Image (tube, rainbow, N blue to C red):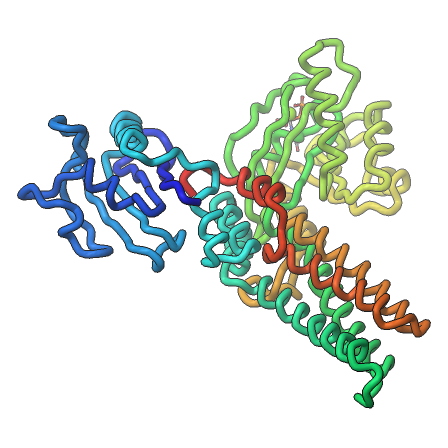
Length: 457
Ligand SMILES: Nc1nc2c(ncn2[C@@H]2O[C@H](COP(=O)(O)OP(=O)(O)OP(=O)(O)O)[C@@H](O)[C@H]2O)c(=O)[nH]1
Ligand SMILES: [Mg+2]
């Protein structure tokens, strides 16, 4: 943290503007060495936070025409001195300016290091820092909104709220242990149990948001499955409303996985078209088929497509097998053609699945499919703007541990265990919740979290 770090903060490519960013004690000194303002003005003659015009120079040589600003600690993103240089957005000027900052004493920032410093300097707690990466990676309005909610600290507040109750319990217990000889009022196990139950309820309420929260963040992992030629890629295209995947009447057209994001009335869907399931002779196709089967295990939802214009084959029965215990919507497709079997016949084979009859090629049934997905997953009870929502696996795991701790404590209270035993569980619960906001978190976990960031953030 003693170093001054530098990185390119904009995406690399051709763009109007590129930003090189510095953070740390020496930032402004480094900027002074490489910047000359209009009328030879030195950057230190410019006011804090004031954007100014000039050139980045390497000795006598002009590198680029830029705007530059410095911001003095502590009112910055990292709470350190920061400099931002707005140069031309090509790969060459940005790289040369970055190199120049490195030659003049900065060190190349690690992934997420700016945000890591913001966390270590107390500008953000850990769950808020994690929200920053989610914001950047958000692919739909909903995932963006839940990340913004977390960045604003809604989850942190709720976690701190619970920890405060735990702290009160701990203080109460300690007082009783320390002064047990004196005549302070003896602890009431009934009251202790009530408090612990309150904690349990609050933890469980947070946990109950986790599955929808994850879907809002990552999208509903939806896999289109079926034997070759039933209309899977046609379905992908119909949902996306564009010709994304190749559609032909040759079975085995799709070889690889095709992933796209789409938003169905507020539900973010990551939709995955796959190779038709069959015993392929072609090795490329067979790899595709294997991948399709892998995707099934990670799916939140499977859309299984069957072709009503041909009698069911072994491949169809194999798919019926795969989807038995999976969350599935079944499409009976090609209704515009003469049919070999009907919905009732298929329903008998899969009695517990919803079947929708479609003619994807003519657009019939797509609305009903979308409505069914909405009904299955619409999270009316979650208020994305204001509720504390758990979207992150790490947070969920900490909550699960905290829940176990509080349940242990409650069991201890019920059988009148000694107070110091109960206190251990309460303290563990407090610690486990603390790791969500980063309290007492280990260096290795921090490194892992920030390594998921991009450079320059
Ligand atoms: N008549 C009719 N044809 C359809 C319908 N849906 C798809 N098709 C046709 O069926 C053929 C196969 O469609 P695809 O979407 O490529 O099928 P797929 O399941 O992706 O096939 P693979 O990638 O080979 O596994 C194409 O010729 C489509 O135009 C439908 O509802 N009615
Ligand atoms: Mg296909």
